[in-house]
Image (cartoon, rainbow, N blue to C red; front, side):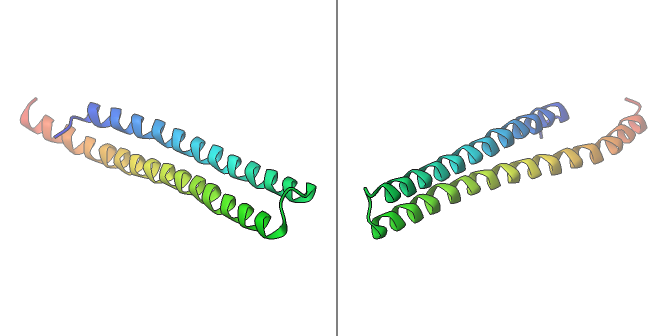
Length: 105
């Protein structure tokens, strides 16, 4: 089994991954919003008819914004897992110290 130091390193890594995933989620969402705005602009200028514009805007919105939300949610999930692991590690430390003291270590 992993030592508590290795587990602490995994928790730190998971927290960094959480930040990266959440940042990436926001970036993907922003790109989706920007894409939708560009298609709205093309529609207003007249490069796209209503049917083309609506399908492009909905497609862009659904694909990118929902992807961004999914990545963001994955980051939150990783962070929650790291927090649970940290709590379990903290809860196990006093019992390990007591067991070591009873053995005379």
